[in-house]
Length: 283
Image 1 (tube, one colour):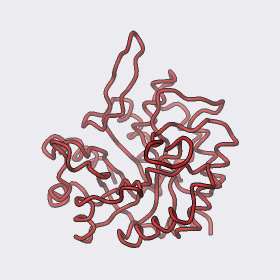
Image 2 (cartoon, one colour; image 1 turned 90 degrees about the vertical axis):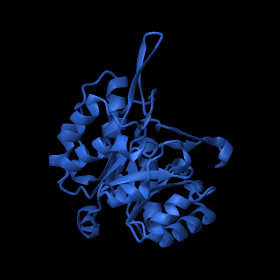
Image 3 (tube, rainbow, N blue to C red; image 1 turned 135 degrees about the vertical axis):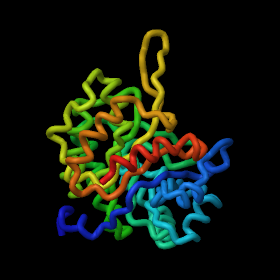
């Protein structure tokens, strides 16, 4: 069955928020339950590194029976060795426990060398056709192993290596894996800014009918000795390019099922305007 057939069975989750282990303990962190009770968060994206698991805030959301998605934080999709039996068993157990609607995660480099807590980081992939094909193979293998759709995401970065433009790279991944995509419009805005492109460059040829989920987050413009860059800090103020990309994509993504506002380390009163704006744009 092709993606365009499979996507019809995926639930429309609405607008949600994200978390990862320990995020709720940061000073001024988002109160997940309060966001749900205020009608501002329809679901929770669980950012999971299996070595640390889920914290009490995530467990409380699951115990309340609220919807979730599962975002891996420890898998290099282009490395078959990462899909080892222990990791797959832990992921299957987590999916069963959380009832997550699908699996997603940045399709870049979550670690260098063997998967170990001391090796964890996040870098963009090398933007070459062979790496796109390897990621596509990883998506297919993971989908088969866990019985869930797997949505690769474009990671953040300040340096990009390889010959392919980023959107062409992920279009190749989507076609090779016959998969949906998680388009992070804040990460894309960073890439466009860093590489000197206009916000909407490359989107006309991008398969927006494969976008199932979108991420929106704030970023901060920085300058270091004359080098301007954007920090992906998950603040509550997206840069203008992020809004331009979101406005372009929303009416052109017929299979969009979910939007995540990444604002986990901001109190609800500060995050509310961003959540309300995104909710006003969605559907």
